[in-house]
Amino acid sequence: MFTGEYHHNLDAKGRMIIPVKFREDLSGAFVVTRSLDGCLSMYRPEEWDVLERKLNSLPMTNEKARRLKRFLLGGAVSCELDRQGRILIPQVLRETAALRKDIVLVGVGDHVEIWASEKWASDNDFSDMDMLASDMEGLGI
Image (cartoon, rainbow, N blue to C red; front, side):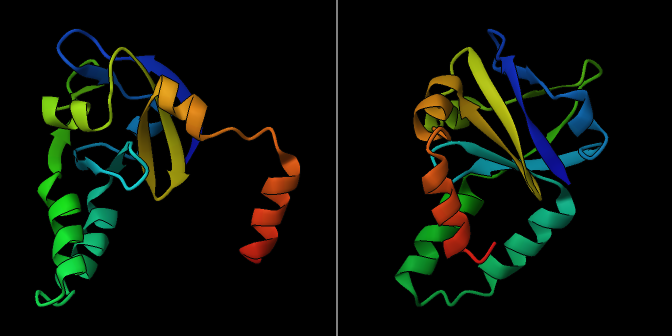
């Protein structure tokens, strides 16, 4: 399970270091794709296979299903760690998530999110504890 928040940098070639804590679970190939929140998501093959099967089971006659498949499957790339524990994020995905130099990797259970630092700070303000408590209650937690 992926947990934690890590602040890193992209180098000039678009490579980023994967935190050591995540490397154990991401050994071998894994998938990076677009996310609905304006970030990128990294999946282990087993989690990606589950999501891919669900997407492929959607009816191709449904316009919303086709659009979602294009978004997630069309944006997916297979990645592998290099010897320094880095991955290369393709330019098109860096642009999609507005990734520049400062990035944040966030473990959210079954996958890792990759955020532009500025977007992470603006979209994820956790200072309102009453709102968080209300959200938890609404979700039955």
